[in-house]
Image 1 (cartoon, rainbow, N blue to C red):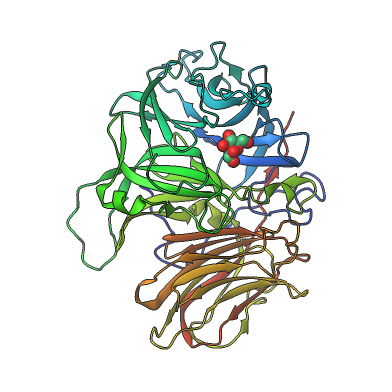
Image 2: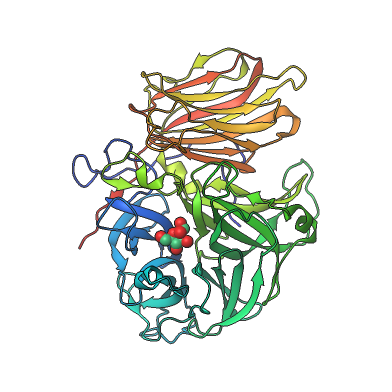
Length: 542
Ligand code: FRU
C-alpha cells in the first residue's frame, strides 16, 4: 500500500514538473474552464466510464455527446494519462449502433485471455456497457436496456463490438437495467458484474466475460431509495490499520472488506444526484452488509461518499497494479438537477479530482475516506505558510502566495475552545463583484458546509443556489481542512478525507480572492496555500 504523503508530514516541499504550452492560444482558457480538472474539449460529458490502467496509462472514457452541449445519443469519449494528473484526448472510442446508445459501463484487462479476444499473446481490454435502445423506449417497451461488450487489441485506441451482443439481455420488464461494473474475483475465480436495476443491484458471474449467470440481488430494503439506483461499483478493500500513536504496535492481521458504491438520483443529502456506499462481505455469490451497519441503513438512511452537490456516478479504476495498491476513484462533477443548463458555452461538465479511497476505523465504525491523489502535488506552484497562532476577525490571504490566483490548494489545521465557540467560521473565495463561496464549519450544529448562494451566476436553475451541509464532529475541536479551488469548483476534504464535499460555481469574475472569516477566537496550528498550475490537456492526434 502506498503511503499517502499528505498525511505526514503535513507540509513539505515538492519539485514541480514543467507544464507544456497549450495547443493553441485560448485552448482551455474559456470563461469557467477548469484548469486542473479533466473536462472535454467541447460538447457534453457526463459519467466517467471504463476506467482501467494498462501499460502505463490511466484510461478515462466518459459519457459523451459530440454534437451538442446537452445530453443526447451517448458515445464513449476517451482520454489517457500517464500520471493521472495530465491528460491526452483521444478519438471517440464507442459510437452508438443498431443496438442503441452507449451508456455507462466499465473496462478490464483480461490478463488470462478468458474471453479469447486476445491477440499475439497480449491480453485484450474488454469494455462492458449498457446499450440503450431509443426506439424501444419511445415505443413504450420496458426491455430497452441490456449489456454488451467490446474489445481492443491496441491499448484502447480502437474497439470491436462483440458479434454476440447483448451478453446480458433485459429480462423483459426492468426499465432501469444498466451501468455494468466488472471485477475479477480471484477467490471465487470468476468475473463479477454489478448492475443497477432500478431499486437494487444485481450481481452476475462469468468465466469469460461473454456468458453471465445471475448470482444474487442486493439492496431492495437497504440504504437511500428516493431515486433510481445507478452506477454501482463493488470492490474489495483492506481495512487500514491505525498508524497513529507513538509506540509501534504489534502487526495486526489484515482485514478485507467489500465496498459497494451506488449512485442515486434524486435523493442525495443536499439534493439531486449523490453517491452512497455500503460496507460488507462478498462470498462469490452474495454481497452482505456488515451486521453492525445493517440496522442503521434501514428506513432510507445511507452512508454518503461526498456530501457536496457535485460528485455523481463515480466509480474506481480497474487493474491498478498491486504494487501501487490504491483504489482510485473519479466522479462526474455535476448534478442532474442542473447539469444541462450550467453557464458554460463550449463544453459542459468536468470530472472531480482523482481520489484514493480507503477504509478506516472511526468512532462510528468502519467508514470510507477519500483523499486527493499524491500525483497532484506536481501541480503546486508558488506557496506560502499561513501564519500559526490566534486568528480572530477577517484576514485577507489573497496575496500570501505573491499573486491572487483562481486555482489553489489550501491545507489548514485549527483548534478552538469548544465551550465558547458557537459562531460559524471558515474561508471564503471571493471576487471584486461581491460574489463569494464560503467553506465553513458550524460548531453549534457540528456541521461542515459550502455556501454558494452568492457565488455569482445562479439563476440558470432554481435548484442551483444552495448552502450544502455535512454532519461532522471533529475530535477535540480540531479541524483539518484540505481544499482544492479551481476556476469553477471547490473540493473540501476534512479530517484526512473522513468528510468530503464537492461543489461547482460560476462567478461572473474569477475568485482570485481568499480570506479567513469568523468573529471568533481560534488558533491556526499550521497551514499552507499553493497556487496550482494548469494541467496539460493534449489534443487528440487524429
Ligand atoms: C448516470 C446515468 C447512467 C446512464 C448514463 C446515461 O448519470 O444516468 O445511469 O448509463 O447516465 O448517460
